[in-house]
Image (cartoon, rainbow, N blue to C red; front, top):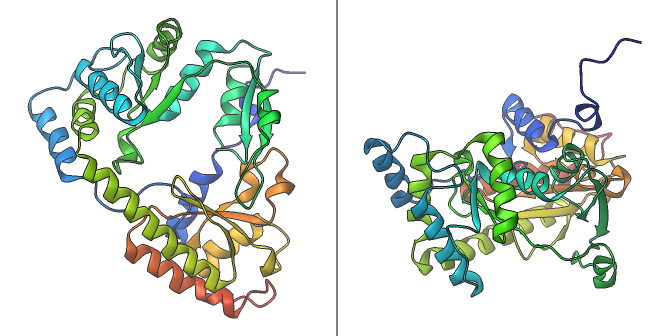
Length: 333
């Protein structure tokens, strides 16, 4: 039998469901509440810092594991947020987004056959990342409506090693910049840096300079950001509940999981396709967040990191569901 031109690893997972829904949203002219990117501007001073860095010709390679001033800003922000002091010279690795920081970290500490603990429902990258590094996912369930977990189940699932991964994308509305970082003890950081070096070499130099500006924004910025997202969450929840969704109120991030069992669709994939093609709103099928798709077959996820105008337009379109909830009685836009 001839050898397949595709590796065994690549055969074990599909493309991103989230990014597929974004493509469908573009094709259908739908409001995109699927992918978690803000559709409003990044802070002006952060954009200006990036422009100024480019004009100052900070356009060549930064230090592989991160520009020094950006690492110092990360350490300062981390100390403010957690009270923990970290060494920016030895305990921080700047990567091309939190996504690359995750795979670099896994490749640095995981051997083939090791287990990786994953909360479920999960972000879709975790399964493929585990496969890429040869690990076996071990799932710990989060239980609705408050997505709680059994501490004993978690404690029995792992033996302790901590790497903190973060990025600029969500907090500063710059998802396209792809600048993230991993914080770990020196020995682990050294391994992460080696993996990062041969994965991507380094993150964009001028955007790291702007990152230092972003991380040093005043506390008022973060307070207002939190207040704005609470308002957006509540606005979207009101619209969804009016349309007939059962919402699981989130207390972090900017995603909202919903129960769709009241609409009478056989599964989340058909419901999500109906929404994007006929109602004009893109969401993520809930099954993509579970190892057994049946567990999410009556759930879909919305992202509310959008302008008020976008959220209002989505709510207006979703009013159709309250009138025509049955899959046998569909109204075309």
